[in-house]
Amino acid sequence: MARRPLSLLAYRASFLREPDEWKGDYTARPEGELVWIHLGAPEELPAFVDLARWLNLQRPGVSVLLTAPEGQMLAPPLEPYIFACSLPEDHPRMVARFLDFWRPTLGLWSWGNLRPNLVDEALRRGCAMHIVSAHEDGFTGRWSRWAPDVTRGLLRRISSISVRSDAAMRQLSRFAPSDEIIPELTRAPLAPPCQEDELEMMLERLKARPAWLAAESCPAEWPRILAAHRQALRISHKLLLILHVRGAAQMAQLREMLEQSGLSYALRLEGASLTEQLQVLVEDDASKLGLWYRLASLSFLGSTLVEEPGATDPMPAAALGTALLCGPHVDPFEAEYLQLSQAGAARMAQDAQTLGMAIIRTIAPDEASRMAYAAWDVVTESAQSVDRLVELVQDGLDDAASAQGASR
Image (cartoon, rainbow, N blue to C red; front, side, top):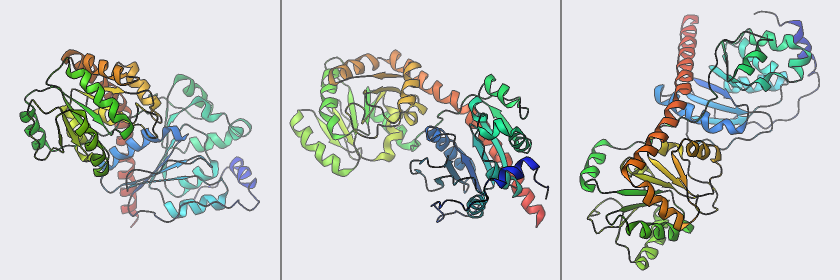
């Protein structure tokens, strides 16, 4: 095994003290291949979760570990094959404990701010590392300035380096060459699935009838959604509202409100007669959202019209090319809604009246098509960077598997 350069030995010597106690999650290392992705900041989490989903789709059985800088917490992963934790300090003993447990097959390191002991030890254990979407501010830290040989020595052992801007390329040229610029990794979600035979059946049952979807709505929004639907019915008399709620308990609560609304309604798709007299169809099955996103001319994304925690993520709907409406309360997806709004794919409503006006304006076929195409364009543009990273990871995992087979 190659000897460590003097600059790195000097760095390691700065950790002679006992390490601070670190309570990492060492309870659930999965079997098989594990891709380790280190985020520069928690804000990068949604984009890398999308990447993890694409990777697992194309390589079933692979797991993904997401890490954040020391002391920063990541939201709990949504998939059983995704794990998350913060890194320990860069003490050799803590680094060894981290790598002994997780045993990553391949690593992606975003942004910069390398941990010399951690990266060095991962490389020495045969874990190929890639720097992705490096930022010009990611290589200006204390050790990059005072001991540039540490950073230079690590980067020369990295399998590949990509940067997000010309400024980042100029900054990294002080340490190692990088001739690849890729855009900052943004959201590229998987489209929610649906059954093709069910989609064809519903297209036949709707008979080109206009419909709009209120997805993942919350109880405080229902009076506003129903008022907006009444307003839109004055202009589009055959308009159908698919009102999606979160679970059977909410459906029972909504039913009382519908009884008093004077609107003709049905509960759930099963057995519902989609006549022209039906004005509201209530759905509580989250697995049906992929179907309704495909069938509705436009989609209002719930938990945004009132100040409720947890707005609906707009990107899965955008991936299916549907025109999008929302309210003003879009935390924690402000960046995604802003991107879609600037592209002309999303329109914001402040209350029931403006929501009704937005529905009337957007339900027009030419306007709905224009916004739907803009939404789809946002997602497909982001998918190019994700496709490149998935290919890079696939190749790296294949190389690791070949090397492991050759060593047996």
